[in-house]
Length: 538
Ligand code: SF4
Image (cartoon, rainbow, N blue to C red):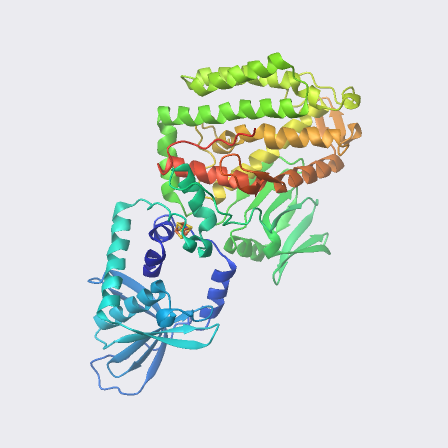
């Protein structure tokens, strides 16, 4: 990891302190290149004190030295007598720059040379083998490079002892090639910290991979090669490439084989389980061992009444303002209601306690839902009558849709929070209760009108859901299977829609926006950013 310190101290800290890792095409290619040299040789390196002059090659050699303070696995060592040469494998081609190698690569192989010296070998140079151009580049261990290597080791130790993340590089071209750019969000972070004025489009606006929903009573999911195989009563009915899958949502009684679960875990693909009606039962999130520092910071912030209140105010203020904008754009709420919502948003911003904030939120919800029917097309209003919010169980189709949409959004945010290593069950506004994803519910507040309510109104107005898509039971109103399927499609379309982030100014899919908001909240609890950047539409 010494090379990471040279590339970017924050990259080193994210990987070493927070355990962050992101697979990219480059890292997968790197793994492929290392496949041969990662097989450890059975014989160890010859003793440098013995008179063994025969040249030997050893793969995947583990060496450590307490004085140097470094442990490393060397891809390959070529030894002859007491002389040894470390060979470090690199993907790609040797760069056409002075030394034909980048500084982090030179420092890394020099560090390996210093380890060999510490074990008694003479070692005055190393080799970088570039698999893309099949070229060996010799790296001489001169005084300057050795000094750089010691400085990098000292810097790594300083970062580990400090235990905090160094700030992101500012406007650096290195971020473009960094595998953690989507986690670090360097420009977004620097913009909010006042260190830059623009956010470069460093991450794709949306994931190429899509969620896979499976709703088959008695069905099963297995794995064949790089594909997920979907079976219904042992009959194969479909296949999906694993690399095209961002997450798997299982509705109802569908079994998943262990080989598939293991592959999904290795690729960091979460699997959420739901009842056949779509209610979230639990989530399998791989690799939750990373990001412990953020969870500790989150728990501390949640236990601090002032910090918790500041965050809760931000969530509710922007929820009210976003609801007001949605009503203004799509309905006829009337000037008085808009004015009242504006006042309530100001009151939420200035609330002095969580209790008073909840009071403001309750009044704002009543005002908002009173005007919600004005967003439904006039000719549909008698078929989709709505006279206020009710739930558990919902008593009419609009409430059934709203409840289902909020459940979908809560599920998305629960998985998002857990995937980025935050504790979905510890919130700031929503108090902890067994089984309640309080953080997901907090983050959801400002997005309810923008995502969930918009999908509901859109699905009604464009005829995607019809009155016969609901079943009325004595317990309440619920969507039919067909209605639920169509609503999930509408919800997924919304999640995939690109929108301009009001603070960052970049175009992102709604799904990516959920992740960005959760990551920015992570930076706030870690103390890297002073305030939570609200997602407020205009
Ligand atoms: S994105 Fe840039 S600042 Fe962040 S870790 Fe990578 S190189 Fe460093």
